[in-house]
Image (cartoon, rainbow, N blue to C red; front, side, top):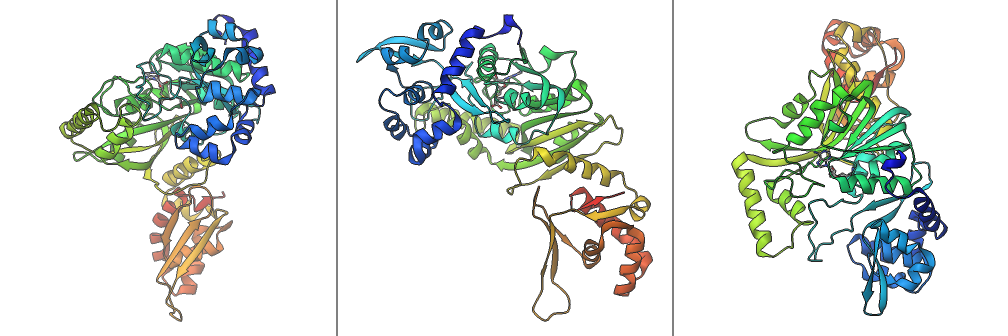
Length: 500
Ligand SMILES: C[S@@+](CC[C@H](N)C(=O)[O-])C[C@H]1O[C@@H](n2cnc3c(N)ncnc32)[C@H](O)[C@@H]1O
C-alpha cells in the first residue's frame, strides 16, 4: 500500500493492532474466552450466550462485545482501552447517547484472523446482517469471511509466487491468504467501500506490501500479469441485477464467471494459476460440463473444473433470500416467485456450484478436465492441486505406444478392495481407492489389478502386460491393445503416475 492509499493513519493502525493483540483478541483468545457453548450458539446466530460470556469491563470481553457482537459498550470503558476519537474520525466507531449514558458502537465488524504463518491478523467487514434482525444489507455491503471464502482459500495452490491478484477482495480475506504466498499482492474490487475495508484488514494484519485498486473485473490491472489470480466473485444468478454488489453482478446468468475465466489467461504469466469459485446454470438445452469446460478450451491453459454441488431452483432461491429478505413476509413471497419465474423463462433447471482452476501452460493441446466430486475430499486441496492437473495433462498427452514403454507407478495411498462371495474363485468387484487427496474410487478389471500390484516404476508397462498375459493365459497382443485406455484414465485420476 502506498502512503496515499493507506486507509487508516499508519500510527493508528499500528496502535490498534497492538491493543487487539495485547488483549488476546485473537482466534484462540476469543475461542477460549467464549467457551464451546457460546461459540456454538454464535454459529447458530444466537448472541445471548456470547453476550453473557463477555459481561463486565475486562478488555477482551469489551472488545468482543464491541467489534464482534456489535453491542454498544460504555464510552468510559471504551476510552480506557481504545483511541475512541481517532477511530470515530475514520468511521470505525461512533459515540452515541445510550440508555445508560454515552456509549461507543462499532460501525464495522472487526474479527480476529489467523494468518498462514500463525501470526494474528484481522478481518474488517460490514456488520453481519443476521436473519430475523429485520435489517437488509445495503447495495455496497461488504460481506465478512464466510464458508465460500474458506472454500476458496483451501483451493489456493502453494507459492512462492512473485505477483498475486485477489479480484473482488471484499473484506480482504483472500489477499491475506495471498500475502504468505506472493511477494507482491494486488487486491481489487468494484465497491470502493470494499477497497477501503480490505485495506484496513491488511493494515491491521501487518501486511504492508499490498496494492489496492477499485474497478470492475480486470479493468484496474488492464496491462498486468500475475503468477496467481484468485476470485470468489459475485456469482449469484438472479433476476435482480447487481442489487447486492457483494454477491451479484450486472451480467446475466453465469456470464460473470464465464468472463472471469475467459479474461484470466491474458493476465497470467507462463505457468501462472487462476482459481475461482463459480456458479453455472444447468438448462435442458446444453451440457453444463461442455459449456463450462468451453470457457477454458483453446486458451492455452490446462483446466480443472469441479462441480461440488447442484441445487434445484427453489433450494437456490431460498439459500440466497435467507440473507437478504425476512422469511414469511409478502416481500419474501414476491421475490421468491419472481426469481422462479426468471429461472423458468431462462430454462434453468439447476445451478451448479464449484471450483475452476486454470494454469497457463501456453500449450495448443492443453486439456480441460471437468468432473463432479460431491464427496468429502482431503483439505486443503491447494497443496496437491498441481498434481491433479499434471495427471490429467500427462494422461491426455500419452499415446498408446508411449504408455506401453512408460514406467508407471501406483501412487502412494492407493489401496485395493475386493468383493467376493466366500470361496468363489473370482471377485465380483475390484476397486482402487485413494486414501488421500481427492479420495476417488475406481472400479477396475483383473488386468489393471495385476498392474497395480506390480507397477513400482522399475519396468515399462508393455513387458509387465506380457508377463501378466502369460500368468492369466491371455493373448499379450490383446492386453497391449486393450489396457492403455483404462490405464490412461487411472493416470488421469491420480491412481498411477508416470515415473519416467
Ligand atoms: C462474494 S464477495 C467475495 C469477498 C472476498 N474475496 C471473499 O472471498 O470472501 C465478491 C466481491 O466481488 C466484488 N465485486 C462485485 N462485482 C465486481 C466486479 N464487477 N469487479 C470486481 N469486483 C466485484 C464485490 O464487491 C465483493 O466484494
